[in-house]
Structures are given as C-alpha cells and as structure tokens.
Image 1 (spheres, rainbow, N blue to C red):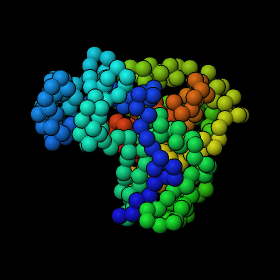
Image 2 (image 1 turned 30 degrees about the horizontal axis):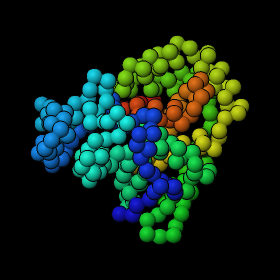
Image 3 (image 1 turned 90 degrees about the horizontal axis):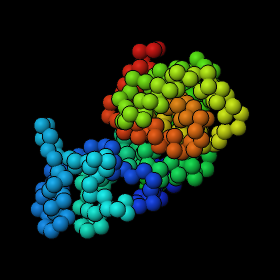
Image 4 (image 1 turned 180 degrees about the horizontal axis):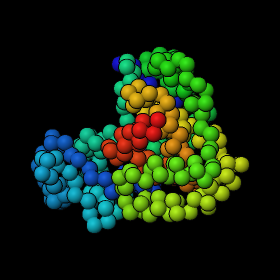
Length: 293
C-alpha cells in the first residue's frame, strides 16, 4: 500500500492547552482493553482517578465516563492530559493516540490526513497554497487534486466536479439545510442552529449572496477538495458524482455558516465534528444523495 498525504500535514502537532476546542469532550472515548488493563493497574492518585473514570458498557467496551460538563475527567486545569503528563503519550489508548489522524484505503493507496474537527488541521489547510498538493510516499511525486483523482482511476471527471461554486438561491440553501437536518446531532446547539436556518431561509440566502461577492475562494476550494479527498473511498463505492455532491453540500453548508457568522475555519470545524466524526452521518448523507438521483 502506498501512502498519500496532503503537503504540510506532516507538520501537524497538537495545540494542547492552547486549543480552544479540546478533543477530550462531548464524544464517548472508547479504551482498548490493553490500555484499560494498564490504567486499572496504575498506583497513586492518577491510578485512583483512572479507575474511577473507566466504565464498561453492556457491549463489553470500556470507555471514559465524561464529567458533568462533558469533558474527560483526566484533563488538568491547564487543558492538558494527565495521562500524557504523568505516564507519557505512549500510554494513551489507541483512539486518543491516533486522533485526529485518518487513514482510508483506496485500491493500492492509503489516503492520510488529519480531520477538520481539529482546529489545528483547519489552520494547516488554510496555510497551504492553492491548489492543494499531495505527496506520494517514498517518491518525489507530488500531485494536484485533479492529478490524484486521475491516478486513482477517474480519468475523465468533468472539471466542474473538482471545484466549489457557491449556490445562494433560497432553493439551494433549503436543499443544503434539508439534507443535513436528518443527521444525528452531536448536541442541542446543532439542532437549534439547523432549525433556525430552516425558518430564516430568506435571511440565509441574502447573507450567502452578499458573501459570494467577496469571500475567500482559495480557502473554499481547498475545503471542497479536502472534504472530497477524505471520502474518495466512498466515491469508489457509490460513484464519483455522489462523492462530489457530498463535498458540495458539505462545503455549501460551511459557506452558509461563514456568511452568517464569519470565521470559515471554525464553521468547518463544527461541521466536521458533527458530520465526519459521527459514524452514522456520512453514510446517511450518501444514501440521501443516491436516493435523490
């Protein structure tokens, strides 16, 4: 298998205590059994807190019980992980050690990167030149996104499927919002925002049209290509058109939120946390796309 990674993403380093949105909240964090056994055997105050934090569900999977604020109880007041500080990062569970990295297989390739739910990943994406370039493992080969798509077997993709174009009509805004409404919400704030958008379509459309006159086109092209890049394995299963439609809807939603609230990188992070990091939501959106064809 040959690894491919967007240029610049090998420079990823966790922002740790300076991150505004710690990974260690909201999500139930599963712990592999080897790590759970290690945690149960630890002495001292950290060991006591680890044992008190572990909970095994009816499915036999052990996870860390979040505190009343929805945070991992092993976070220190400075926002850093006590496991790393006291035991070292080699003692992290598999999920904590890998996150937010992703690896998807596509024929002979492993597509690598770090997810946009992480604000550092969003910052790295924004820092890259446009167009995105992708490094091929153990070679000097560097590919643009269209070249990568062709290398993966889609040699005659229409150019319009490789670019994002804002769609700002009331009908298009409604389409984007309606497609996302059935997704499983990560919290009540997402649900309330979606309902507000649906009830204020005229305002949403007007804001989108105004934003389209002067928006960071380079950033949105990179967002579109990166979102599609992460789902190329699904595009292989469902068709490239479906993958492009998924990326268009997703980037379109980020565009609408940026038009209303600014800060497109933060809007991308919220979208990714809600959609990409829920195991049910991406397949749901692909099924909707196929059913609409």
